Image 1 (cartoon, rainbow, N blue to C red):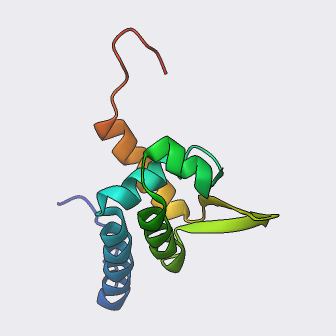
Image 2: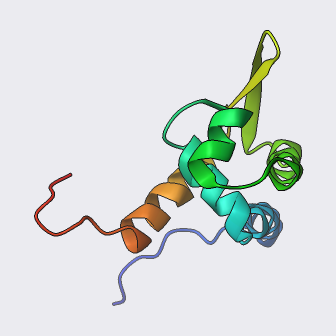
Length: 112
């Protein structure tokens, strides 16, 4: 007797989930956007701070932030003339945590 398996997920549901995952992975596949999400995942930042922290020049920064907003991966808050960015997608944040664990190992002798 084989171990019982859970009921299979309907094909339409799997296809929809695969499409959503592919959209997220496409957004994450760009190194500049990935760097921005790594930074924004640590807290809320304005454009000037992101430029300083990442070294990404303003035209490229604005272009990539626009894409991240269009994909609903980040959201904004305006304070005067400044716009602050924060992670808006729990799925993106979860993937970022896995990527961080896999690709950003702790320095030797430093505990997390």
